[in-house]
Amino acid sequence: MNPSKSAEKVWFITGASRGFGRIWASAALERGDKVAVSARDVSSLQPLVEKYGDAVLTLHLDVTDREGVSQAVTTVSEHFGRVDIVLSNAGYGHQGAVEEISEAEARAQMDTNFFGTMWLAQASMPIFRAQGFGHLLAVSSVLGVFSAPTFGVYSASKFAVEGLFEALSQEASFFGVSVTLIEPAGYATDFNNPSSAKYSEAIAAYQPVRDALSQAFEGYAFGDPEATARAILKVVDSPKPPLRIALGAAAIDEIKGAYQSRLATWNDWREVSVAAQG
Image 1 (cartoon, rainbow, N blue to C red):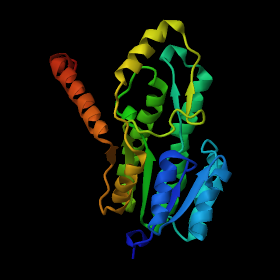
Image 2: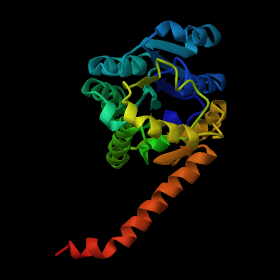
Image 3: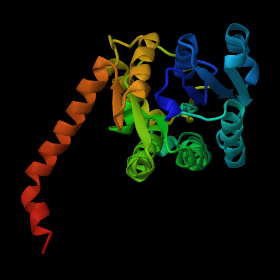
């Protein structure tokens, strides 16, 4: 029998100190699942242990440490006897116009958001293959489907995760393993917390760009992050989970708009594209 189909599931969630990771870990624990949680500051996870006891395993982890990620996944599997769900949530947003972003800032963004997710996937797949089941999820964003001014390097990291996981979903299906990309719109989390968001040194010429972006977000209806827990539980409980799940009403509208715009452009330039066939 596939234990992942039983009522109790075993999770590993990275970046669970706050925000989505904390909410989803709490929701899983509240319904009786077992959850391993990681953070760079492991003391931030102690309230979960105090409330849920042995159902929680806390791990100190920096997801840019490939060897550390591999050891963490092995530890979770050995501690609970298996792992059904691995959810890559650790990450942060870097904001800055493309011209403003330094090499160090760009590499740090990719190291955490993209490579951290890749190391987690690579560490999880051998265990999932041996089990013959498993579900690997990664937090992307609507900005992993389209981009916006001053979010170029953040979007680049999420676009990269989208490409990686789309390929992985096709590879993993041969072994009974599911893969899901989570694409939230704007939520009232602590995304702008200094540990969750970083900013490049501003070039004054781009201030009108920032002003226009701020104006565009005036009156934006940010989602309630607590409401996402029900959606994530439905996804992991589904016998056929989706490759992509958009979170929030705004996400659906924004993603559809982005694709409609692309289709219109491709159609407008179709003759040129076809002629390029030779």
